[in-house]
Length: 195
Image 1 (cartoon, rainbow, N blue to C red):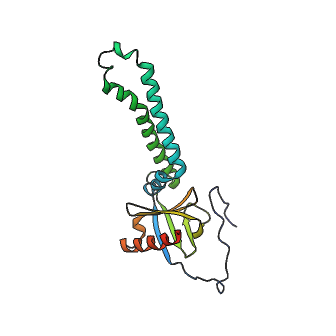
Image 2: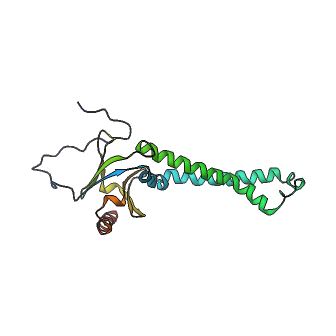
Image 3: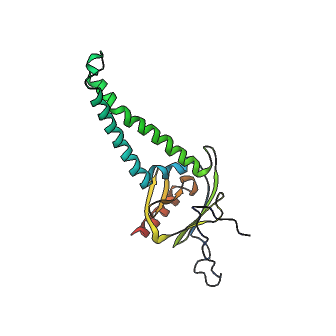
């Protein structure tokens, strides 16, 4: 009996008879344990979250202006609070608090992706010429992402992110590759597929 699919799971790729399959083995087979630190890479770069976070910081700065304006007549009577450094602190405190909450939220989202701060999820990524298949121990079915839907490829600190569409990414940590050369060859090959 097939396990039930959960939201976010992808349907398995259609089976192809071995004698008609153009490729019988992936060009690259990567295996690694994904942790919250790996998931945090995508949480920092996800376009939807970045847009929301920028908007929240601007709102926090606006709140600082409102607070400073509301206190402008009252600060003159309190010694030390009518100075320029005090005004800067009052102005920057709301966006600073927003930034702290955003970092905590980003960490929480990353931990939720893998099941906790110390959790590790066995991950296998098959790289084929026309697709990437991600198998994760916590998912019933693999995620199949076509090369044509690849929108961006980013390398950060030796880690590679294959970004598909607006909200999906395959995270390939540096430790998944045999070395820097293998990673650089992979990046060059897949950058060519972007064009």
